[in-house]
Image 1 (cartoon, helix red, strand yellow):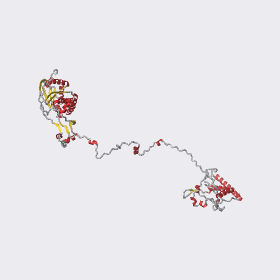
Image 2: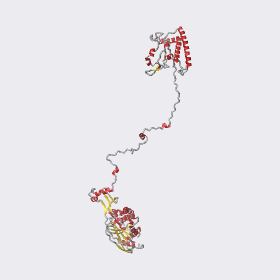
Image 3: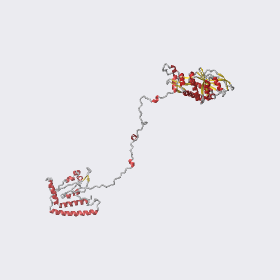
Length: 186
Length: 334
């Protein structure tokens, strides 16, 4: 069943008379310099970061669900198209998906925050997925190569192992190979 | 008063006068003493014995002038009127003749009285003869009461009887007992005021009830008085009407909104930002059922440019998810 194309017509509205920006009818949107936002996020506590990212990701997931329905039942192409469209509307970069065996990896190109904003993007996607699918995923920065960011979506337990492996200097290929290998190897 | 009664009264009057004439020496002395004490002038005295001297002329009493005189009305039984007759005392022969006449009159009066009593005249007043005061000779001369055709006032017309022309001796009017009016002691009417009467409440008008009994209704609605609106003033709510979003959207494309400052002309022209979807079909790698080299399947948005397929060394189980949920769950199970 073909999915509806992502239509961003009139998704963002600038009301210059009132000095307001609306996103899909939702008022009080603010254009904030990405650098200032990244510094603010970096200086906040862990709990504050989670709440901040949640405030970003939950509206995004609601808009996704309103357009696509249940994302878990949608095709990969449809989810990438609509979720990537919402991320692009927020100015957070270009989203794509990589499937490494059984591992799900989101790729974000052109993030405005640079390297300092990788954690922020990971937290926003994490909150959006949780809101849209009802699962409890964790997004771990798998690789940062210039303007490309790879975020691995795993469980909380796997996220801790991945961080450990990455901390040990394991390449993201080896991490993915370990994850897709026999249970004993992971 | 019947004719017989009137005759009886006249006879009694004549009898009394005869008796008075019989006792003339005592009366004459009394009258003479009064006359000397009064020192009446000679003109006032009666000129002759044949001509009586009434206080009021008979013609005057019988004429039309007498009709206007309130004679009988003003003479009440309580008034003491002394009528003085200045006449010489009778002689012994005259006294004897008078006694004979007196006897005859008394006999005649007795006869008439008997006749009246036997007849049982209905006109007899209910009062007994003892209670009834003695009829005065002047009263006998009084005609029955007649209504004055002029004034409609009861007026007494006194007419001297012809037989008592010169022999009438006027005396003192007897004092008749003042009739005492005994009002019947009728029981005083009991005035009972029923409770219903006391509970009657006059309700003049509903409007007054509102004003008197009820507190001033809040005009409101009816009655509350609102301050007059200033001319040209509009309700505050009208000023606070929110603008419709569609109106804002429709106004901006018309480019009627001029840039207010030179710093943001581009922003004023930028009406809306619309993401344009660029279709760039990607060629997903087919997953194989056999373990193979770990190669990433790349799913990109149509707008993104083709990504370089990364490949790492490794073996994976064949996996071909059809939905995002399958892939998500598989990744969470790693």
